[in-house]
Structures are given as C-alpha cells and as structure tokens.
Length: 401
Image 1 (tube, rainbow, N blue to C red):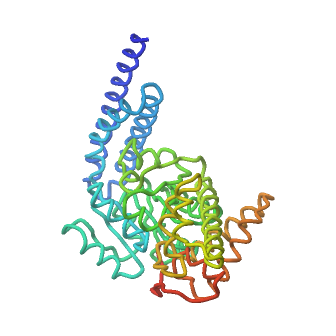
Image 2 (cartoon, rainbow, N blue to C red):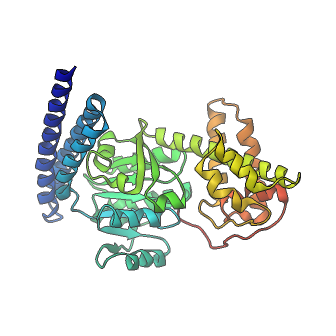
Image 3 (cartoon, one colour):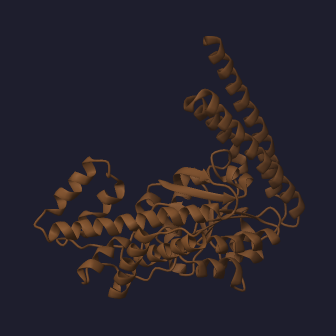
C-alpha cells in the first residue's frame, strides 16, 4: 500500500510537470501571437487553438491527479499549471453588462484575477463607475459590444433578459457578433432559455468564434464575494481554458464550476435551480405569514429552521427582512427576473411533460407581487402577494444583471 501511494505521488508529479510544460509552451506561443498586428489573425487563431488544447489537456490531467491522489496533490498540480497561465492570460478580458451581477463579477476579474478589462454597458455611467473603482488603466470603456469582442479574446456577458442578450449579442448594428473572428470566444452568464442560448451559440460559431453558456447560481452578495456557482454547457475546451485548467477566470468570480454537457444543458439546469429557489422563498413567505397571524415570533421560526435539516443561507439572508416588522426588499435579485425564470421553468416542464404544481402556484404569487408594484423589489417581496400591500424597495430601473 505504501508503494502504491509513492507511485501515485510520482505519477501526480509527472502529470503536473507535463501540464506545466504543455501550458507554458503554448501560452508563450499565444502571448507572442497576441502582440502581433491585428492583420495576423490566422496566426492568432492558430495559437489560440493550440493553447486551448493545452489547457484542455492540463485540465484533464488535473482531474486525473485529483481522482488518484486526492485534493492536496491536485491543488499542488493546479498551482503549478496556473503559473504557466500568466503569459497566456496577458490579454484583456471583455465584459458586457454591468448591472447588479455584472458589476461585482467584473470587479473580481480585476481585483482577484488581476486582469485588465474592456467593458460596455447600455448605461455608460455604470462603465465609468467601474473604471473609477479600480486602479488606473485596469478598465477601458468601449463604444459598442462589437468593439469589446474585437479587442478581447474572451468576452463575458451578463444581461438580465433574453431580449437584452439577443439585442447586445446579435441584433444591434454594432452587436457583439459583428466583432467575432476566428479565435474569439464568448461566455454568456445570463439566465435565458435553451433555445435562446442555442441561437447565440449558432450565430457566434457561424462567425468563426467559440461559445460557452455559463449561467450562475447566486445573487448580488455571492457575486460580490466571488462565491457564484457556474453551470456550463457547450464548448468543453473553452470551459477548461477559462476554468481551473487555464486562465482561472471563473475561479475569480465563483466558488464552483460545473460542466454539464452540450449547449443548452447549463440553461436547463439554471432554470431548474431557480424554480426550486422561487418555490422555497414563496413557501417561506407563507410560513412567515402563518406565524404572524397566529402570534408566533418570526425570529423564532427562523431560528428553528436554521437549527434543523431546512437550514440554508437564503432563509438566513432573506427571512428577517420579510417580516411584518421590517418589510425591506432592496433588490439583490429583482422579483421580475425571478418570475421570468419561474415562467421559463414552467415552459420547460410543459415541453417535457413534467407536472409542476408547486412551482405553478409559486409563480402565481410572483405574478401577484409584480402586479402590486414589486417588480423591481427583491424577489423575497413575494411575501407581499400574501399581505396585499406595499413595502420599502428600490424603484431604480434594472436593465442588466
């Protein structure tokens, strides 16, 4: 048994060294290519393909290390490979959409990953706000989505609705797709339907680029803390490049990244997750109302839930502000977006002949809360559908996540 462990550790060392060699060599080739003139697109495209292959190999080897030798040895190998990423990661990263989610995600790319960004937001004031919040030169503001993609090898997208995604990526005169050439990559973190994601994928790939859907589980606070969960589907090589096997961009913004398969898988999983979340927050609202109308303290309810099998961060974060005493709903995840996701999840259920009576009932509560004026309140304001009244919330328009 001792001999086996020695052999495993030796194999892990060899794999990490091999991954380092592959990644550093191809990363160097890409770094040289990206410093050439923009006319040398074929050289850049070739270097990008070679380097992405290196990151994919490195990522697979790291997973083998973890499976054979555990997390400690895999972490050592991952750190070795990340050293090789420094040259490859020298280029700027693009970001489209600086709303409730996009702003903290972009900040983490600068502050945690040390990357320089080229950004665009429909409201240019948000772009200026980001630029002013980081060291001088770390953020440049582009005039259009097209310019962002033209200037960056990888561009992230975080927008609030399928319509916004379609406009920014495909439909505007200077949409992102018009900046796509061979070697350009787009990572869409927006919550949209599978068909919308496929439409974006097909257009980007047809233009010669690469596409990864990577919607996130988490709202404003996890985004600020770099604790999002990415639910990815599509181009596996691109996933390996931006995740732990390559540039580690997802790691700067999140605590976990899950690759789920072909394009559409990430979008479907995100809707399933948000459907569960919406149903849970509506059920919590009913429980709070039940306690309030039967002379039971809401604080005690939350303490009991937190001490048992139903303990979860969402109840701890939202429950107190949902009480009659507070009724505070500053938007971390706008209710109109939560209801949109519930609607899309129910549509997905219809297409797969899946009965979803609990989600359907919760969706009616969200629709009622929207009708009462809580569209831009936090989604925890769904409890107001049961109260039938208004409460403290922000009326600031929300156009980008």
